[in-house]
Length: 306
Length: 270
Image 1 (spheres, rainbow over the protein chains, first blue to last red):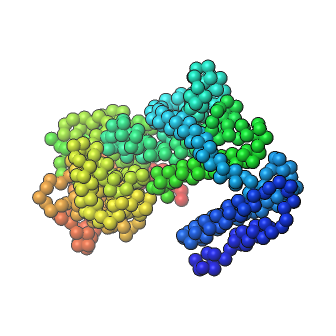
Image 2 (cartoon, rainbow over the protein chains, first blue to last red):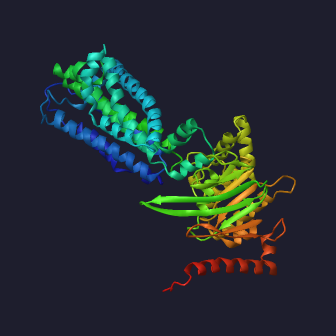
Image 3 (tube, each protein chain N blue to C red):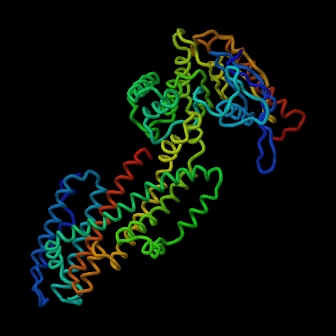
């Protein structure tokens, strides 16, 4: 790519537009903390220029710049609607500068809440995968011969995991253990179903190739069936991850004393919408980062696929 | 005692409530160190026969003896190369070969397995491609890896089900010559017993000691023909000899005679 193609992009004009808008007089009676918004945008711009220098494929650069463009666009509309024209209800929609400032002030608190939420998710999620994959391999392998297991799993998987909450509360002592239990079930069924259907769809030729090598059952399940059905297992894992986040943040909004859902609900109860928006943004970022990591793991493990 | 004895093998399939006979009373034997090709048109049951040798299928009647013992299921004492999907797509070429070695030689260390794998990949000319996945290799290269794995497992018997059937003509020739060279060796070691299924007459003449020609409806042995050419064989020289042409023509005549017999008295409308 030429220097022109790499750096002379509309996105940077959007950044300058955002800066110019700051020159307009504030209409909002309260403090807008515009400096924080400018620093944030400048940070994004520096990051954008740095990343632009290293991206190799034009397609990836376009994608990346489109995302940055979206951020600038959102910031511009946001700052215009709040600080500059005071067009929407100020108590519910604070200006961006105020939100970014709050983010910095609450940094430690947010980290603790992220840790709490991710801790619960990881525990329930990883336990579910560790249990569902071997069981799915075994049942799927038996179901290739029988078939009932597939239907039973479909039925149990069709029950929305949220209905297990009353049982969780009746059986388990703490909010944390109930959450882990529900996330476990929310992940267990889709992963079990994915693994079983993966195993049942493995090509007969692949199985024959393994059989003629006279592999034992353990090798057949873990060295052949597991990689051969990995793609379908990941579909189940993806589904489990999405549902887990929805369930956990909802549960935290109702009954928890920590976590991202709790953070949002707690401050909105007090009418502190600056922190509510901080919470929303953090939840968004956490989910994006986790899906990104998850995608990377998936791509790495499936690198042999064309 | 023959290495492999096929005795009165009959296989009936039930498909859509109709029973159909894939093999009927097939009997022949294969000596130790012999290269035997099974040829015949599609539907003659040659692949069914091989799948019973592999241990994947079981016969309705009759049995196959190896070293006097009847076959019971799959066993790691027979190396197998299929036409497709012999390799596991999630393993590199090297891992595929090493995985095969592990199944027959549980005692070998990981380092030993990889060393042997590299040695055999070098024999098939793929040492530079050892870290590639099957999807990154051409069809011909994949079959080379499959052959390397079957040879590296060092089994007495090698079963090959149309291994070059899906390879283009130029690469097929190269693969046939490679297999011939590796199997013939330098004459110091006992050769492996090979059962090779094909529908290519030239391939079967070049490679085998004996050709078993099969016929369809129901699948049965039509003729057993010994191949009269000395080893080591050289394709370029062999195909120029008069004997080769005569032998090939007689095989072709048999092949088409069989088809003509099948059509028989029925009127053929083209």
